[in-house]
Length: 152
Image (tube, rainbow, N blue to C red):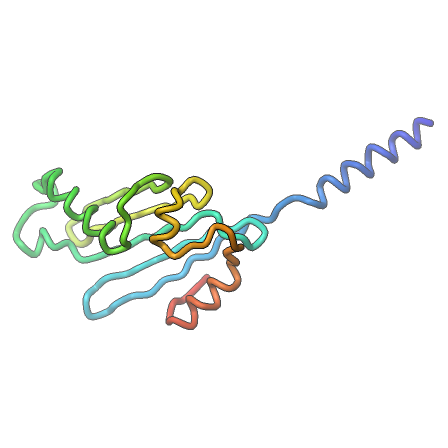
């Protein structure tokens, strides 16, 4: 009886462990050499369905070009850059989005993370993401590489 119970417990554990979801992350990058802008997009998926998108945009520091030191950039100027990035991606609502901006002498880096499970329907529509269909990581990577992105 003990052997049978032990075998049953081991079987349950093996079956339970065999059905774990597989999380995978891929990063795709494209650079515009003439303008100095680099766009890096990171997709996180569970079982090939994308659930999080990270967009990192690195651009030359326009304030340094105007003679404004990084330490002297005002909060209003920082907000202006964030608003421009949101406008660039046609985002009007920050529900489900984490937006971070950092500044150095050389670059301004804007990082936006979109949690597809918590983003509003409006944001998903603005980003052309259909929450009713599976957003396949493999398909997105294939499409991104066809557009000139380098994915790893």
